[in-house]
Amino acid sequence: MKKLFAAVFLSLLSLTAAAERADSLKPAVIDYDSADVDGVSGTRIFTGNVILTRGTLLLKADRAVVKETPEGYMTVTLTANDNRLTTFRQKRDGGPNLWVEGQAERIEYDERTELVRLYSNALIKELENSRMTNQITGPFISYDNRKEVATVRNDVSGQSKAGGGRGTLILSPKRTPAGGA
Image (cartoon, rainbow, N blue to C red):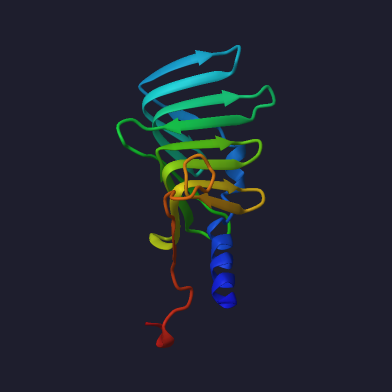
């Protein structure tokens, strides 16, 4: 039992592999159908097929609220309409073709703290080339990129509650079969 717990714990750690650090120093490009910009508060609201790219980071949503601090840090809240999902995809450090993808009804990202939160129907998966290597789902997922720590809870509030939803962790084998087949 201890070995199983250790394997799950180590796999969770690998699921939280660092996103490409160089992306935070690249310009953000936002495509949208409509925008409302408040230069005083630093708040920008984009609606209609919003696509935000920043280096290898790609975010898609029906609506995005982007706030920028005087120091230049952004917070982004992505939401979807009509039971659709917001999505993200980003290259991971550590290899030439490592990616992380995620989706949820709402995604919040704080650039200063490097914290991302996925609310309702949350899913994060790691890919190597196009092969899924790990996947985790739950009603709520929080990921601290600095500490490389993921938290999954059974309620969209970020708390675990009796009778709440359930999560799933899928761990793909790291070993190849004998003979290299």
